[in-house]
Amino acid sequence: MFVFDVIKLIISSDFSHLADLKTETYKFGMLKHMVVPTSKEVKMKPEDMIVSKTDIKGHITYCNDAFMEFAGYYEEELLGQSHSIIRHPDMPRAVFRLLWNKLHEEEEFFGFIKNMCKDGSFYWTYSNIFLNFGAENELLGYMSVRRYPPVEGVEFFQNLYQKMLEVESQYEGSREGMDASWSLLQEVVSEKGGYDQYVCSYFK
Ligand SMILES: Cc1cc2nc3c(=O)[nH]c(=O)nc-3n(C[C@H](O)[C@H](O)[C@H](O)COP(=O)(O)O)c2cc1C
Image (tube, rainbow, N blue to C red):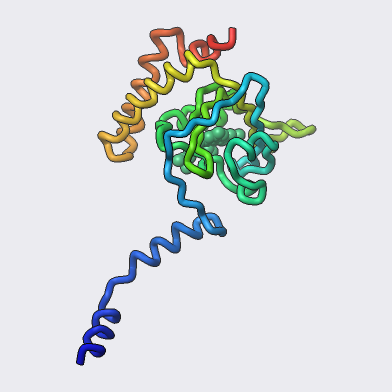
């Protein structure tokens, strides 16, 4: 009688969440590493340069050794993936909206970006992301060169991003949240002469 009850319990159990887990785990066609952010920082040095290239859809086609060393992934784990594989949850969505808007308008993006390593630690970068054209002037994709970020810039943007995230979280990830956080970003940088002027001022 007891064995029968146990079998009945197993049959009636809801295992649908296991299907979700599998979808998440195999999202990228390989075992996806579930990264939990930690407070450990890996600092770039002034001589470091982290480089990557993507196709026009933003899938990574090249990354240099420094990229792999900082991010902690092997090349085969990165090629074909989006850079969101190193996206840190402390980064507001509105920053990536700005980044892609710039690229779609054929402009380059400069910004302070906090990235997450495979082991959950993080590294701040000063990133320049721009269009990569071929010999016939056709768009091949995008490229990014990340350099040592000045400390004062990291402090400023860390603070600002935290406020932007708070705004985004009030709207539970909706478009309104991103719009409000975008407005906050524009408001803060306009007091300093505009986003590009302010970001690039750290390198004058
Ligand atoms: C050339 C290039 C470099 C990028 N570098 C980064 C990066 O270092 N970190 C990052 O989080 N996103 C980077 N992105 C933006 C990502 O493609 C993506 O928009 C972002 O991680 C947000 O991901 P999500 O929209 O899936 O949340 C880069 C995009 C391009 C085209």
